[in-house]
Image (cartoon, rainbow, N blue to C red; front, side, top):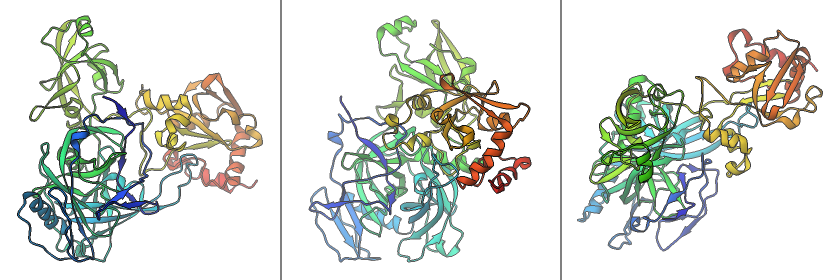
Length: 579
């Protein structure tokens, strides 16, 4: 097998981006460029099995033109007038497509989003707003299901149903960025007149036909694209940088399709959410188990909590010599534990070099896979992710040649360096022109599309590899120095981690602020990476903070999450102080 630099992309249509379209002997638009949010890490996808995954797709478009047909045995295009109904053809594939249309007309909506992302280099302000469109569909309980990236960092959301010129205001009830799903609600009773909800089905088998419904670029009306299931396996979700079960299909999924349903028969088989850059007709949908897990979590707890993790990094044991070294008998299979998250419940009972043999009674193969449906196999991480928070899992472990049974409580785990920070403002603290922030991957993304090559190497490595050692721990860095007489000479110390303040190790940004404002010492000392030191006179620095904030038109010396009741007025007072 060889590796190819094919990149997974989310498929929200950005209205303020330019999308060149080239016609190729059919009314199907071919997208030559597509830009979206930055990847959390470079994605390499094995492509040796892609040859058999391609097949022609059936595409149905609703346009303002009259009925026309240009089809072959496996490729057909039908155009309908708005609201016009055409009897189904005799072929099963076309029957499925027309059934999908009938279901979609009263269920699928177009979503219009205005969003504004934070500026992580200047965390006290946002970037300019942008407009985008996506798709969604009605589920039970008068709710709309769509992708999280369709409404990420939203400031205003509107929805429009098929055949209506009116847009209705929608609010985001819950968002799961990890699984790229969101639930919207519309208060207007007029909107719900004539709307029907779609039912969730099952995970389709290979080569089963699905119809993707939505509002992709190239037109304003609803579109139905038909394809077949090519693969079912855990895949990287670009938006949330997570590894969850996904379905690969050969139907075209383009910008604007995001959030639309993939219909199989008369039920939903998944939600369209991303495609593969550099390849034709390779799209991905979120399967029903992930959707149900998200919805159930929201209904039970009132908000999205997350997907569970064991907190383990495991290595395959396919080599016979490593199995012999760890005293694995010929009938035993499993994976080797190489690292354990200190904050996980697994750290309480498991040890490095343990061999995990089974999860909840399901044997784990030497390559880390477990049985799935009809002679298919997927990584055992899928079994872990489908567990509810605080549920218990039974693990069979081989340690020093002896088999042990352990029970581990599962819950979502947060990395030391957050992978995403959607729908929230960045944290920051400014003291004497020194801007302190917790390191996040969105901050590294500000260095460009190739951030893993252009961002500070040391920070990048820590962001991708280091694990938290204490609850609430953050990696605090000096992001920049706002120049002033008081900090002259310290400007070259930016982008270094802050280790200690006045000799005390820093736990997180709130802790750093408390150590700085303690005021018990005449000077404040910051110990940074590379044994670098910053020393400031506390009173002089406090006065300098006021004039620096005013000079740079910064409204507050700290983000709102660091401001408690007793200090709420302090940043505003500092800004009002004259030079």
